[in-house]
Length: 185
Image (cartoon, rainbow, N blue to C red; front, side):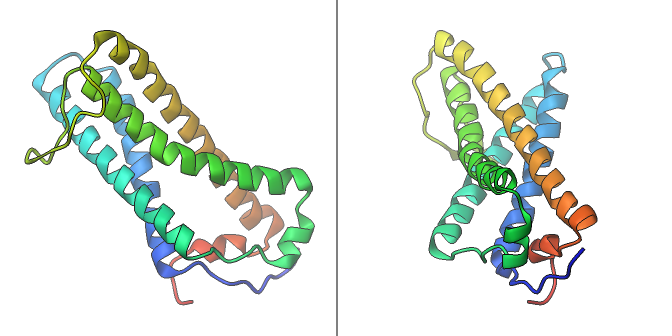
C-alpha cells in the first residue's frame, strides 16, 4: 500500500457530486416503490414528486456538466495511474462517461414518457414544462420500458462507481476517495 499526495476536486464539484448522488438514490428508491403501488391519489402524488425530482436531477446534471467542461477535474495521481491496469483505467473512464450519458437520458426519457402518456410535468404544481413529445399511446408504451431500463443501467453504473471507489479506499489504500470528500482543500 502506498500514500498518495493528491489534488482534491473543487468544493462545487464535490457538492454537485453528492447532491446528484443523493438525488439519484432517492429517485431510484422512489421509482421502485411507486411501481408496485395500486392506482390511487397517493401514487399520483408520488409520481409528481418523482417528476419534480427528475427535473432537479436534469438541472443538477446540466450544472455539473457545465462545471466539468469549464473546470477540468484533477488528474489521477501518477502513482495511482501507474498502479491501475489498463482495463481499470478503461472501466474508470467508461463508467464516468456512461454515468454522464445516463444523467441526461433517464430524466429525458421520463419526461418524454410523461408527455407521450398525456401527463404534463408541472414543477411544484406551479411551473408547467412544455411537452417533450406529442401525446401518443404507442410512443408512451415504447418509452416506459426505456426509462425503466435506463434507470436500472444507471443504478448498475452507480454500483460499479461505488465499488471502484471502495476498492481504492479499502484495498489499494491510495487515498483516491479523499479527493471527493468534504473538507478543506
